[in-house]
Length: 216
Ligand SMILES: O=c1nc[nH]c2c1ncn2[C@H]1C[C@H](O)[C@@H](COP(=O)(O)OP(=O)(O)OP(=O)(O)O)O1
Ligand SMILES: [Mg+2]
Image 1 (cartoon, rainbow, N blue to C red):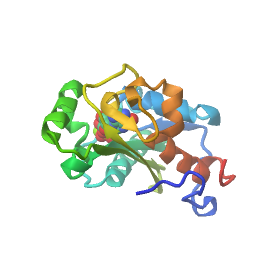
Image 2 (cartoon, rainbow, N blue to C red; image 1 turned 90 degrees about the vertical axis):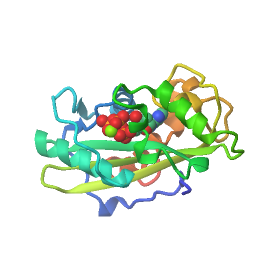
Image 3 (cartoon, rainbow, N blue to C red; image 1 turned 90 degrees about the horizontal axis):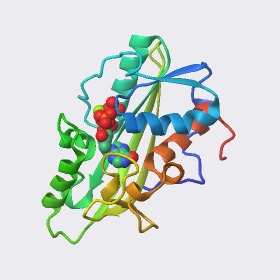
């Protein structure tokens, strides 16, 4: 699925604007919360994480990234009475028919061992010559009245082993984005924020719900 950076995928007039001064980040993943905080920083909105508020972590029963993002955003909006932004994301590997996909976090097990998850990806791929992969990010903003807005972003690349770099989180150390030779684990955070799936989804959200100038 190509992502058009220059072309807004959304029309600001058809979306609800985020005007509240406070937003819940409906995530229990500290790596993600840090990235979303950095992406939200320019907008002067006070962000608080679901973990900080002691909100429950819902079971991700959806079958798509969007479904799971909506389910997590709704749960936090209902529990907090504030608008809530959720991110459901993952890595899709062509040689594995799209796995781990929506199961990317679950492949790391309850102890969130991404060293083990990356090793599982390596062994399942074997010597398949197709090393291509992508990161996908679905964002959902839910309001306490039930209204929801959703956005997506994708970045393509390929996988290299062994894992490299200490930046980022999750599968970053094996993912080399298109147009670069470094893994995301070797990208300083501000550089990852310029090109990542999360940044691309976020740009769509900003155009629709925050900035509205249609193409900054
Ligand atoms: O930029 C990324 N760099 C590396 N790995 C990534 C990235 N983005 C998602 N991923 C992988 C790891 C993550 O754990 C999983 C998302 O699973 P996902 O269910 O959306 O998040 P999660 O369970 O870790 O936290 P939460 O659901 O509370 O937001 O995909
Ligand atoms: Mg999760």
